[in-house]
Image 1 (cartoon, one colour):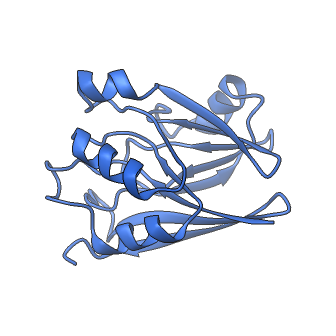
Image 2: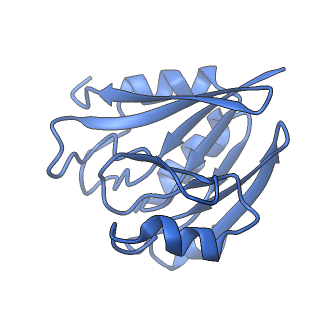
Length: 168
């Protein structure tokens, strides 16, 4: 069996963009699972992704207000194709991130996180895959806005960092 995922974080709507880029919405419609690692900012984006996604897992971030915090957990966990996945917004500084996350999420195979707007794809000493999709609406110090797609088959992850044109 093959499962496809879209990884998003830090959409910051309407602060960074008025809406999700068209490419993001097309991908939402195509994948099996959408994962959002926080900083939605508005409830309308959560409502939109809930309506369009086959399955949605999300967490609140530091810029999300009380209404989003009441609907979303700080940490989300789910299993897919035999892998244990966790989602969190913040993991702290990049320095020693792998070691800290191995301790905090010892039972997890994949940890999706956000906050920095900086794409990240590493494997810890403990074998956990750490993925930050960046942001599809706010590139910060990055050359382009980004999201990640994942193709999961027989426990193997094929991860792609996808540039996003937020003007479309």
